[in-house]
Length: 308
Image (cartoon, rainbow, N blue to C red; front, side, top):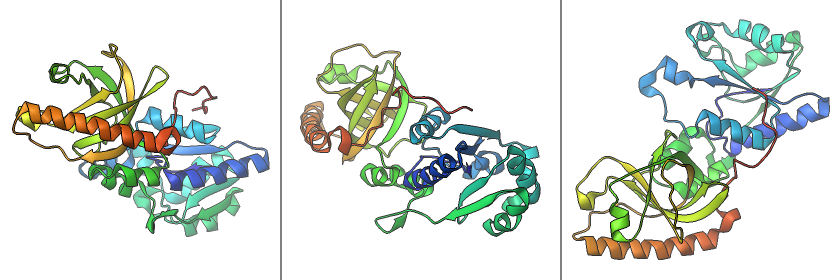
């Protein structure tokens, strides 16, 4: 078993999951992830709670792709929050029959996060449990972490975030009717209402859209459309060489590379010329990256889901 929030299922998480899966197979047992709903900070300090990289559905899909056998989702409630560290080990870990627990070196647990890795090393054997501790994974001299990835996305640095995630960041949502401005300009866009909490910074991005089992090259604008007077923040995706009705459909938008910042153009004609340039650049970027270079996972790929 391993324990954590696993928001992003990034390279550090993936390294930990591989070790858990290999250990479980060597023992003839099952690989298990214990995670929490909601994120503990949403309960303990909502004002400091992060916007999440993944929805619960998408997190489970990525854990499935990693090969995890079972996911235990523990509701983070007042009563669970009050469980002392020693009781957590005896009730929740020994009670589940955990033979080996894999954690990061900064893992904390129990009431007030009082339990440490040292406590686990001391209490584990009495509970019939080996404790395995691993260090962080580094990328370009930075430790890979969910908080760093969130910061990168909020700055629009999706290429750097991709290297830490091991895939392109994506949002998922439903296509809604917008102002139809894109169609009037010759670039009809899908207006996506995201259910993914964290959306990259305002700007124009080369993206890949996944819908109906297809992956399609696209250009996505995140922002307030300042040329038409600043309005609400929207996510608008122009799918290259596509002609179809997407209203009401769910799709994923994978952010491959940021092309430029959002700008207020003096005229609509200048905006159209810039969009034409954006499309040319996006084709070049996506052609260079390719499906593998973009690291776009197919989450709808048939596979045995982990039991929950």
